[in-house]
Length: 158
Image (cartoon, rainbow, N blue to C red; front, side, top):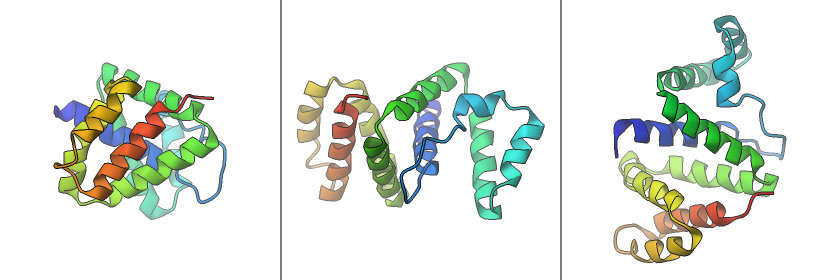
């Protein structure tokens, strides 16, 4: 997978995970496009409101966001908007899915990333057959993550 595609995928996953909450809430207003429009003082103010451990993570994410190409930014904006349009239940499922994904060892996440991209690019009818062909390549847990992702990607938006 090309480095820019990998970075975009990881960043979109990180944005979904960063929106985690133990209770339902509205989607944060800090969309990637909104954050990019902030001036340095506004960004610093946003960071200062965070606990120190989260501040470092957020600063790193902002740096990665700034390093994206215009096309990668457009893709990220489309993905963020798709996430925003999901029902609260589907957003909760997406958060859960990506928390589990992030808990996997690095090498397994690397192996799964291209499959997420492939599933995203396939029409719903092609996803099931693609998943069936992956049984020898991935563990049962990994296959379940891919299946849940496929199901979530097939769910119509509200």
